[in-house]
Length: 172
Image 1 (cartoon, rainbow, N blue to C red):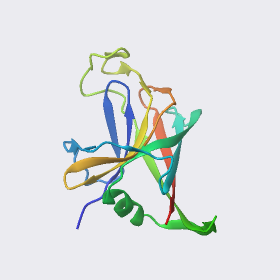
Image 2: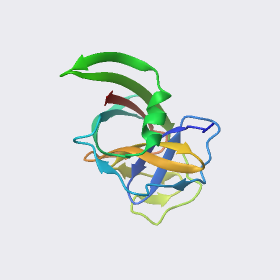
Image 3: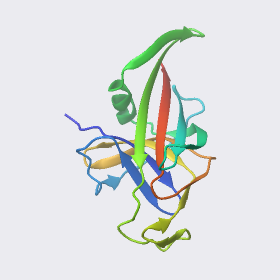
Image 4: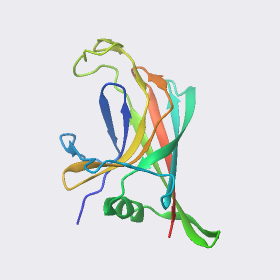
């Protein structure tokens, strides 16, 4: 049986992995072998709403990301099958189902290392700008990117938190 771990990756020169399962392995390899496929004519539609809050819980921003790419492999359906179906329906003769997953990440005050990237001035005074949101799974000691959305940006500082709410529509 495969272990599936939900994660979101934000990219800006570096990759940050956010995991909602305590059994996570952060030393796994990222496998996007075969690349991601344009989602436009697929059976999937996926989007995420990311909510950024400061250390006091005040709302800083809300960003909507629509997935433009997906992984055309069985692992995508295997992951979706682990989520509870929120709604079912028929549209234009196709059966649709909607699933959702929420992902939380709380940034630490101090980093374990300083990166050679603008914005990382020291371990406890840093920021980065997220430019891509990716939903992926950890299975067979690899991370598979299954949905990727672009065209958003926000800055994250120490003690900020991000919650991303992914909604996935799948048709037959």
